[in-house]
Amino acid sequence: MAGEDPTVSTSHPFYDVARHGILQMAGDDCYGRHVVTFSCCRMPPSHELNHQRLLEYLKFTLDQYVEHDYTIIYFHHGLNSRNKPSLSWLQSAYKEFDRKYKKNLKALYVVHPTSFIKVLWNLFRPLISHKFGKKVTYLSYLSELREHLQYEYDQLPIPPEVLRHDEKLRNLHEGRPHPPAKMPPPRPPLPTQQFGVSLQYLKEKNQGELIPPVLRLTVTYLQEKGLHTEGLFRRSASAQTVRQVQRLLDQGKPVNFDDYGDIHLPAVILKTFLRELPQPLLTFEAYERIMDITSVESSLRVTHCRQILRSLPEHNYAILRYLMAFLHAVSQESILNKMNSSNLACVFGLNLIWPSQGASSLNALVPLNLFTELLIEYYEKIFSAHEAPGEHGPGKADTGGQGSHLIRGCGGSDPPQPSPGLSGLRVP
View 1: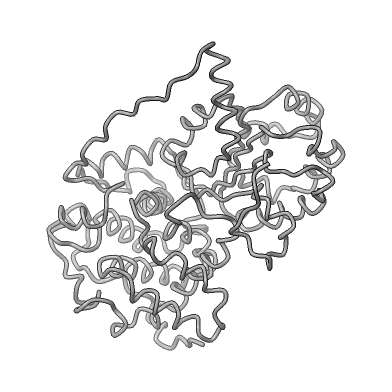
View 2: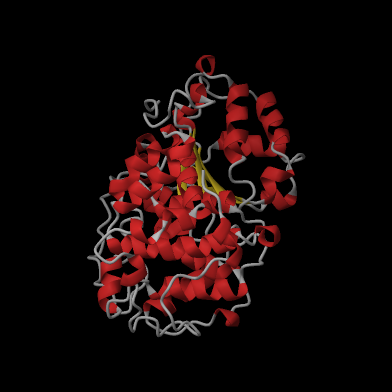
């Protein structure tokens, strides 16, 4: 069994379970869905783990995601007679997870299934609906999981025990040691590349324009046509269509989202762009300070946010300010779109910041989402002009340029303006 997760605070309401690292957050998949992993090899022996508490912890964790589309990856390796819960517990657990949890679960990947899983499936078949059964995919090797997740696979918190088990299985299957796969040398990015390249690269290739073209394209479209869409940024889109649009944008070709008839497509493209940046928009350096937000007195948290943002590079600050202005405008229409600042923070937090090594733990979600919620809720206070980093501040630095040729109907370069009624916003 792996050691305890050092990122879990002793103040966690389920510290006795969470400290084992059985559940981990792995960002979003290529469909824009949150990904949660469950690793059996991290389950301690049954006499050291209260399975009822485990069930409560599972519900506590999934409650953060059930309003959004999400994916679960279940690593079966490591489940044995010492840590395996009883069949009655499994039956109780399935009944506990009612429609609220199953509705937005879009995929359940079972990695390294054994005969036990097959027997279990037959036992539970009368309880499992046909619709839910179609969401389950069995994967014999990690290479199959990589095919499903593609770019997101390398960010998964896969336990070393699972990696070793997978290598052993492949060696047995092929009858010989499996040499490490040779990766082809990376190709240089295209001059028009939008995804997976640095902000500096985008700025240089777009005549000094600070706001990346793909960000301006998606924000402008959603600002015009998506503010009243219920569940904006919660829903996923066709992975094939997402990849198609990514290719077009990377090739510098125009994209008109009206042609696709799916308002959630530009929302997923926006999140994908942020997630595929080589370094998060909020930078690796700010990660620890952001994690400390929960220890700051409530009345001082807005000031703490401003202090953190002052340390950002001017370019990052300008982009963040542009994005938060838009998300603030989205939150002001929450009566219609059901996306208040808290809901938006749950979606965007993991796309704005992640640690330099590994994936964010579930324990990091509380401070991460709180920080993001503050940026959205108190946008006007936090991004006041005199707090901007650099010599000119983002309001002056964002001077336009020639990089917006992909954007239809977007002439200016100032951030999208929030609703007029925001001037009276009170900040604690």
